[in-house]
Image 1: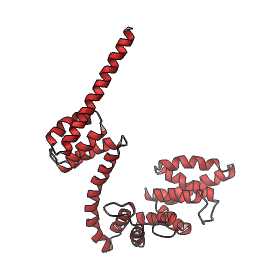
Image 2 (image 1 turned 120 degrees about the vertical axis):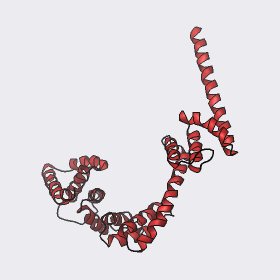
Image 3 (image 1 turned 45 degrees about the vertical axis):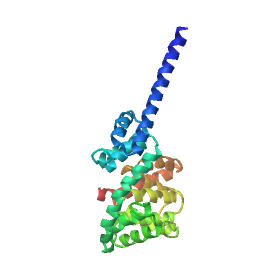
Length: 267
């Protein structure tokens, strides 16, 4: 009987606490919507401290825009990130919009440099078009800017152009061209190019015939892993299991050859 009474008391307190939090959130939300930011701040801040994602998102917006508080985008970003970590869609959208404000400024700044032939700016403009940073996504424009930068032998653009051909971004998919551009970057120590070149060979899409495709895949993946690519570490373990002892010996020798030629000189 006593246990039942204790359980009832605990349940009652829990329900009461939950109802109080819901009431506070509702009051804070109404105040926020009515632009009564003093009341909103008083109601929402304790909830945000306890991790309520709705409260975190509204407080983030208040700090981002200076509504009832001193404007502080860094504080806004911290609130949004806490909401994002809980999978809160409103916080995800708010964080994306906040970042995009900075991207719009960056886009306007680098576009003239890109048009004047700056390879770094051209590559960055390609990334912004590809992923929709500060502008609408445009795969054709992304490819065009990557191409301009790659033709100036700008290392990150060599890799990005390889990706375009690999996945058909702004250009018809062409594994042979992807291999060419990936190798240009990989042979100058570009870690991601090594990784993607390894995946190209592991899927038997490469045309380079110096060694068996799986052996080349392992050699590039191993060096990408050595340079810190965590995904490459997992893949190289699976690749080595596909090889017989003689192939494993060849793969190890080739990976060391690549390390000497394409890793050590660029460290």
